[in-house]
Amino acid sequence: MTIGLEHYIGVSALLFAIGFFGVLYRRNTLVIYMCLELMLNACNLGLIAFSRYHGGMSGNVFVFFTITVAAAEVAVGLAIIVALFRKRQTVQVSELNALKN
Image 1 (cartoon, rainbow, N blue to C red):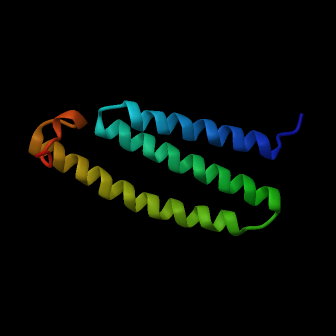
Image 2 (cartoon, helix red, strand yellow):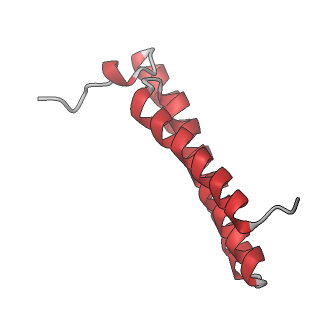
């Protein structure tokens, strides 16, 4: 059995769906952040699969830059979550209502 493009795309779509529903249904900001990262990595897997299918390196290079930007995003995102926790003593989305009203 050979693993084809459709298998990679299927796994990528499944990971993206898990991340998407995690963002929709979870209330903890840290878990939501991890689900966003799962969605990003699902997109990276799809890009790598298409790049391998077409035989070029453009998808690989694009994923390299995406992972680099994602590393910086993780540092900023975790800093924001830690700052929120220090100020509010919670990371639950339902209790972060400073912009309501």
